[in-house]
Amino acid sequence: MQKFNALIILILGLLAARSDAPREQMITLGIAFQELNSQIREQTLTPDSAQMRFQAILRELRQVTQPYRQQNCTDSIRFVFPLRDYDANNIGGHGSGFRPKGFNLFDHKVQGSHPAHDIFVYDRNQDSVDDQTDKPVDVLAMRPGIVVATETSWVPESLYRGGNFVWIYDPCLDGLFYYAHHSKVMVETGDEIALGQKIAEVGRTGLNAAKARSGTHLHMMYLQLTPEALPHPVNTYDWLTSAEIIR
Image (cartoon, rainbow, N blue to C red; front, side, top):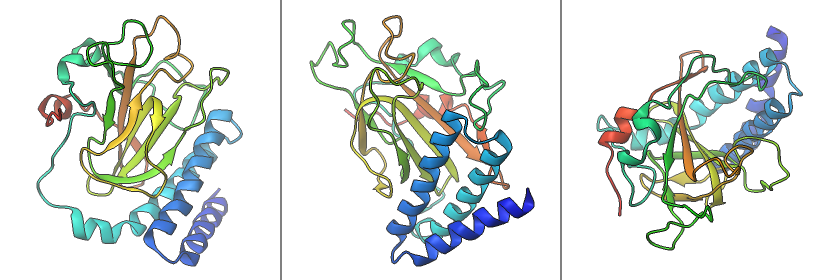
């Protein structure tokens, strides 16, 4: 297992070394992260192997983003509410939807946990358009960071749960934000994202989100990385209730 982990680190290091710019390095790592996400979903890797690959990718990501960290990170931590024209009153269950028990990012067979918050929009006819404005609802970056993976090709025949999604690594917090169920995605792997930037539009993509019983919502999760580069789900409810509202 140690030899396998060392090999993955070596390969990622060589790929990153061949790149000519930080963005190209980020794209290289993003491709590796996206491939890992698909392998976990399709269960073509054991959970132990998936965990080792995740750690190798995220450790490399920390190194690549060191210049970003030096230039952009300050003691002031700001948050933007991730839906334009919405606020914490639209969080499902007033925050009770966060259920991290049993979470395992590396084993797709493990289900039942919900280490995230669902933020619902006004969409009674389920056409992914806000009933009050007759416009799509913008998904905004709650924190600045760098896009490490996206999904844009979900179709109703797809069986996976997240639908169209965006993963953003926040070098200052050293964690990953996951935004899911979008109708459209506006960013690409390697993009540097500003605080409050539009990254997607709320939709109904994903195995469960597409069903009529589900209200139209944004699924938002934050995973704090441990020193060993392992993901730990964090309840972002306090961040959401204190976040800046953009209208």
